[in-house]
Amino acid sequence: MDKTLLVMLLLSGIYVHSTSFPNVYYFIKKNLTWDEADKYCIKEHTALAQIQNMENATAMMNIQTAGFTDKAWIGLSNTPVWTWVDGEPATYLKWEIDQPDNIDTDEYCVKINGAGRWGLANCSLKKPFVCQDEVDLDKLYESTRDMTWNDAKTSCKESGRFLVTIPDPQVNSKVKLNAQKTEIWIGLSKPKLWYWSEPGENHFTNWKEGQPDNSNGEESCAAVALKDGTWTDEPCNAIYPFFCYGDVTWCKEPCVKWNKSGNRVLKARKTVVRVRITSSANMKYPTCSADLQRQLEAALATKGVTDFQLTWKKRPVKRT
Image 1 (cartoon, one colour):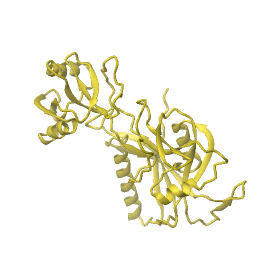
Image 2 (cartoon, helix red, strand yellow; image 1 turned 180 degrees about the horizontal axis):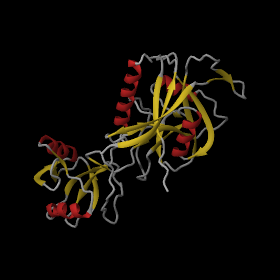
Image 3 (cartoon, one colour; image 1 turned 60 degrees about the vertical axis):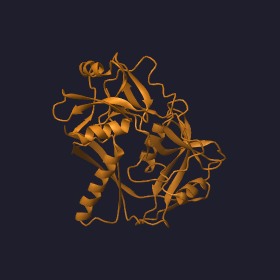
Image 4 (cartoon, one colour; image 1 turned 90 degrees about the vertical axis):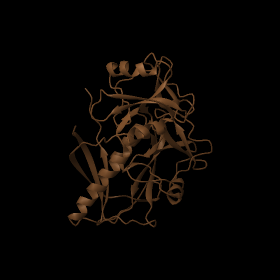
């Protein structure tokens, strides 16, 4: 099914891709949740701070914080959505009473028992599983071989099927019949992945030793410790000050401004364009976002527009 998204395209030009022009960081001494901080940064700058390399990390740590020495949000978060193997977020859930508990921080995969109730399990455990036909969703194929969750997913895919998805109570009743003797894997998981607030590849990390640990099962957002620059995972509803970032650009008007403390601040010049895009892709996944960004950049390049940086952000849906 086609899905229509309203996104904001942010074009900054003329952008110079060079480590000589690192991201510009801004420390905001407002205590906000991670989501509130992200919205503030999008409005006032570009987004919550992205840290692509050690040079960026050093530049951010050199920003004056008016004596604040605790933790501050950066633009890194963990995907919090339970997602089926076909990329769709779960809308129907049938957890055991004490689930999901995430006592074991490696429990990101879902099993079903003979009562039709779901629970978390370490994805590396080996269990039987059920595949589902890609064309006729009513056709289920039970495998009695014990496999890890990822191997079960691969096995189903290699046979032209996928690890079973359960969108409603009727399908759940059918699947539980295969779990009368033992618990089996279903195609639901919570990806143990961290993404930056802006799409694009970025593999740099600076976690504190032992982090991220998700100690209470709800630590899905990242903060930087201002004492040493290392990162920790925190509950997203905690309140901290935060770092925004922008990009150094060449401007027709002077880009250099001065703050009240007499420090030089480089401001990025950007143009905001609202575009409505129809796509069949699941845009909740950062990989889809990054692919869309590459396609948009290629389309602009064919029109001779090359000296720019393009980012985009899905506008929040107003709920009534």
